[in-house]
Length: 393
Ligand code: NAD
Ligand code: MG
Image (cartoon, rainbow, N blue to C red; front, side):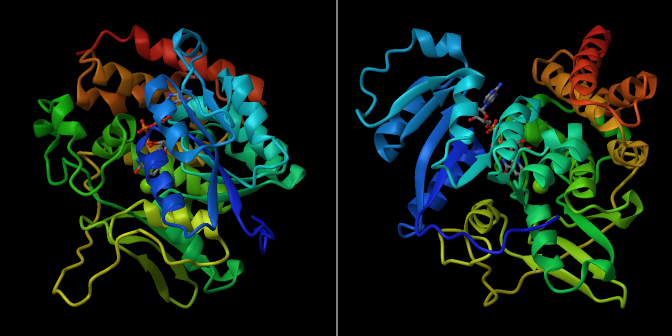
């Protein structure tokens, strides 16, 4: 991956897609704490128009985009600041991310819904700070190729990938042996497969170290999040699947590690706070003081590492298999998982069935080794329909 060496703008203008979400809100804090180095230039949200209006009044951006056009058309926007223009739907997002004036697009929409705006931004040669991992899981090779072809840049925001990105800067790419992604283990670390049969939505949403949106919280509980992250890392850093390992680290202080050929292992550490990886993607290659929590080494604390429990979390082996299969497998896995998580959150599918349903759908799909975007979007729809046919509680 080719990283741009610098940005010339004094004030970096940021478009925050998914501004009402967990990452979006942290990003707004980063901008507020940037001593004027960053400016909120555009914000988007899907359904929460009221929150978007309040955000616009507070940050006075050039554009707000309400992506659920129907909801937006029914809402009273009269109190929008006079300097702020309202746009709607995916077309509104496209206009914003391709606008001449925008310097950085923060992709913080959840799930495959973020694909088209990431695509449009890279097509226009923009710098994309990527929190939204699902597009890379769906279409990694196509997205990386698009970025190369159009001169766009992808900077990781996912904390593990930000850590790897930072640690990689200590050595030459050809000397990298492997990367090790850390996982908190989620709320069900130490559980047996039997114990997982009775867990509830509330249990799954109660993450021990991170406060996140509902979809990624469930993904952390199944460890599907680590699966998606293995595939994300594979494409983002151009690694072979066997160069990506996972270790459970319950304190979430070491965000990931890079091992070089000589056995040296470099880690990136900071308290669990997404403001730091968000800010690094905004400030790169500079480093600025900011609002993220800092590590306090004056108190005794412990760092633990343990192997993941494969039997309790079958999503991990599924991830390795999907990473090895490549082609259309990532897209089908992602769509199946989104559909299964939605059903679980609707109390319509039991927690322990999420990974097995995903495996069954991946294994039964017509695998394409070099799919087009159109083929991937077709398979995405197919996989969702397959999951919705399962009669399982
Ligand atoms: P969230 O559910 O809190 O927020 C999602 C945002 O996306 C909201 O602003 C919502 O309005 C918008 N959105 C939802 N559906 C949409 C649609 N169909 N079209 C357009 N916009 C839509 O999610 P989050 O936890 O902030 O996660 C966002 C992304 O960042 C996910 O891909 C997640 O995997 C990734 N991520 C999150 C964290 C975290 O700490 N929350 C960490 C790493 C990566
Ligand atoms: Mg992560």
